[in-house]
Length: 163
Image (cartoon, rainbow, N blue to C red; front, top):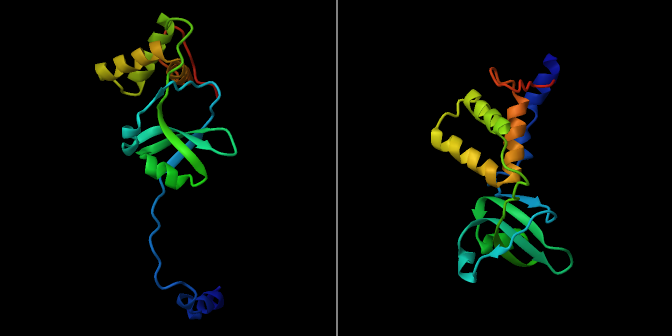
């Protein structure tokens, strides 16, 4: 082992590396989303293109439009620079899927118990979660799934974590 380390130390690695290494910038995150099952009726006027938005529809000449979620938000110029093949882009506001039925008392209790179990006790935050679950099926699915993945002591339904 000693001979190997000595050979490594003796080897001049600096000659192989570029002298001016630059720190790479972290690129912004764009998430490509499916256009199926989502409806985005509201579009923004051209003046809004200078404002950073999180959701965009990117149009291409040779394929279907693609929905993109940007974190952090991006301006029209930034979107067009990130997607050079695009011919147009427009900011959109996603419309949540409406639940088919009201939030059940059992699901609400499970969600509240889970929020308490993770120490989310701020009444405003809890009310916001419950309201989102009443109006958005995707939010409801997420929070009820979370509530059922954790064993909640004292919850009447007795949901338990499965391993």
